[in-house]
Length: 178
Image (cartoon, rainbow, N blue to C red; front, side, top):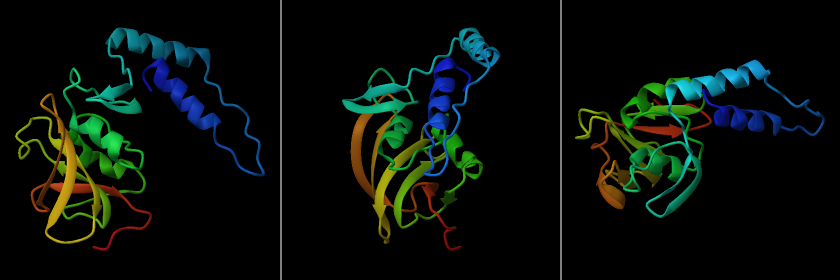
């Protein structure tokens, strides 16, 4: 939310909440907050364009870069995972962000259902780490995943041992069994 587009998206989300017995007043931010966001955006010269296309795939509002249309694992996972992915930054940082988001869990074994496979930066052969999309884990020793790789692979699917990723990130309504 350190740029005007981010603030506008936030306001839109807040103002779109409704309840059958409640009429919400429209939330507005003071002009000073909007101006501060504009100045921060100009000073940092970092603009988050919300990339929509990557390697021929379309994802409205995807916050991750696509490396000159040559792929990015974080872009792909944000595009494929059915639940909103709140994590930002390089893939290796996602594991540490999990406790910050309600409903998100992490484990060294995959959860039954949809998962994000996660590699830290030391085991991924990439100083940025790596993430991949596991569409439906139903048990067993292997997982099937789809992925992109930073600036090198636009898309691939493969089956690997479930012990190869360093961990898994996923959403559940109740805590997973220990």
